[in-house]
Image 1: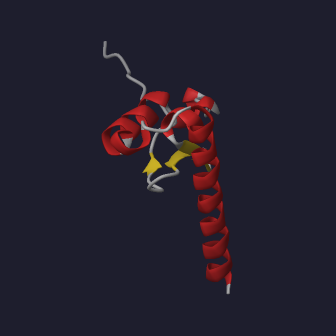
Image 2 (image 1 turned 120 degrees about the vertical axis):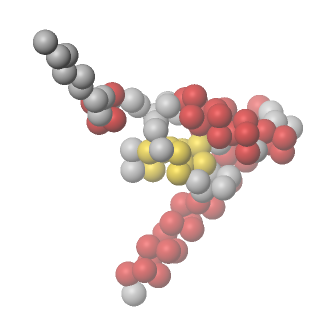
Length: 95
């Protein structure tokens, strides 16, 4: 008798983006995936570990110097820049 192994589907995992990841790892949620607000790289799976790994390997040296309110202000600044860039390219693409 063979056992049937089912593959886990990402949609069935019910992973949810946590707002605390924005300040900790400089990531935000875009279309149910995580995007780095520093380099705009999309992170494939919505897991805190993946966001942390990306931050630690790519941006830790530069952005660990920020702390507290300064770090929160930097996150707001980077999110605003990402939002403006997205709006600009969506407008440009539609014309």
